Image 1 (cartoon, one colour):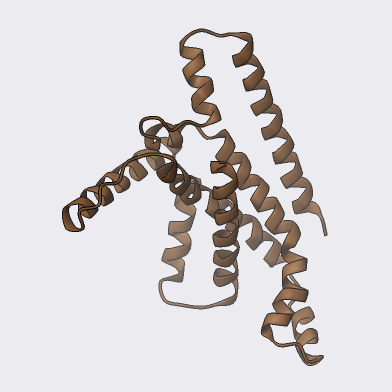
Image 2: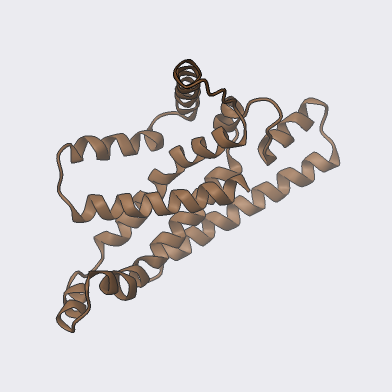
Length: 201
């Protein structure tokens, strides 16, 4: 469930981010673009600790100012997964936009289509292979993540990698081997699917 939710949100945010960076000029665009690449560049342990500090600080301030008591759990895991996976979607969609022929949009507008119709019937279908590839990549990263999840899960929340880790600590069993094999094969299949979609024209 966490992987599905984070993938859906990451795909929307990543696609909109890619479109904004490709189509618009605004102040601090370079700084924003650099910040977007941080989750891709920095080590995962650094990202995990940064998110842990962010959540701790946010929860403390909300408790002090508004009296809201929030705890680590599925919500923090989902937000953390969105934070580190949407830049990957943005990168994949931007790569698709680099080969995008803008004259197709101009032709649609010349034929009477408004901006929304142009986006819905011209831009979006042409970007769909890149969007789907980014979504598959985001899902792979989310379902396979251990470090960031481990730091931001809290008590009682678990994912498949955490479940495998917990069972390994008690000894390697056939169930652990089966879960690991399923996770590995699923990750390989999703990555291959992402690559094939990126190559689709």
